[in-house]
Length: 365
Image (cartoon, rainbow, N blue to C red; front, side):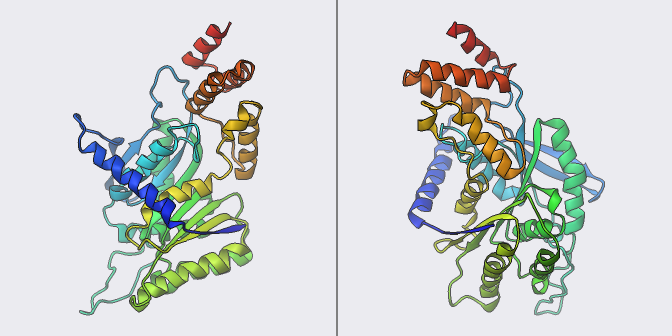
């Protein structure tokens, strides 16, 4: 099922303003502000050390909270995109109205992105008759590293649910689409921002054409962003955008992938990750946001919302303890004591080891 979205520039400009203000505010901080921790993993598959950055949900280590589990988003081009996705995760899970769940964000830093993200060896030559992408064609090896070394490391070290997302831009978006088409069980959800589907005479586009005819890919989600190209752009840039559009308009409607895509007329290939990263999470997790104002009168909507969303995704999702605490505070603030107690009881069923929930229940008596 495919949904088409048209980009609303005013909304995205407001979002961009918020993000810029957030980063500039860090410049005036008295102490250093860091996003996540850095780890070095030796890969036997790639025969090299790889650096990853990991941001955990804000209350992951808070002793007052029960030890909840979280989805993981793996961010390609982690050198640049990790801080963006990590900041958006923080911002989007801070208040009552949450368009996405709290997540563990894993950024994979680059060594040779052309090698890692491209699925085939390109024979394209530059003007001096040398191979333009000499190291290309290592996508299968890189995916093998993610599935068999990186994921086990993350799952062993941190509390994860097993729901995994891949986030990629440009060549990274190509890698995401290639993986969905050829190895769909690698991730539950895929984000492809202005993907380079032109690669190697559109080989991934052609693979998708054939695969979608013969194979049913179910219980997977995909978000595709298409950036703007000027009408007078070079032929290869126009072909880049046309291929993405054809993939979204002609191929995706023939599949059972839960997909959506959006065209961004005010953003080019380099700037589109900012609005698209936010939109992608909103689209992938459509249906998870709680109807807060109705819950005060009908507390069972909390459970109903997550049950319905879990059915849609074919994966069990539970509201985070931090979200439930905000809901409890809200219903209590508007003097809905009986419904507050019901939500508290539901919260304790999910997080029976929570110190703060136990204290709240004790003080209720």
